[in-house]
Length: 213
Image (cartoon, rainbow, N blue to C red):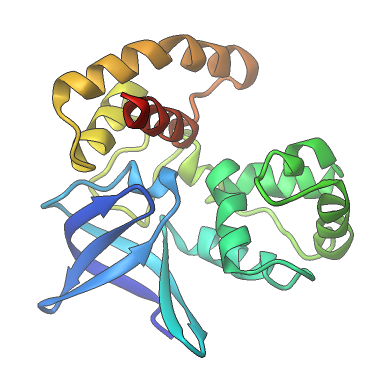
């Protein structure tokens, strides 16, 4: 098992990154929240897990070991594979996943593409007694440090995080600024509702806006 990778970020894309380790570029699948904290040319450490299939080897990367552990634990539920587990973490940070499961918040889990009511209820039933709470839950929601990504400050203003992510994905600074300006009301709504800005959600919306343009 490849437990982690540490090296220079060679490239980023909407669904992953290439990290150079010992002269080899490793393609790593990541959630938007993790991608938003990576910048081409800078060094980063990602906790990883390797998913082996008959016809493929896919390396999934995470901001820290806790997120990776939750990714693996989600897959112990019936009907949950790596892509769906990653989709869960793309929509909700680890702390919110644990909260939704422990409080039987079916609606929150149904926000994940591919999870309907029955799937959400099954997740709650099968995982309620397995999910714990750790001090690293805030690593992707902007409330604390991200030990898996040294040098990238999760407490930076959301505009800076989003701009860096979009420029890293190949958009110009002007295009990034335009998307950020359009998404500012959504960020205000997030702050009013939860007290924090979900950069991963804004990144997905920005990619949709720029894709249409």
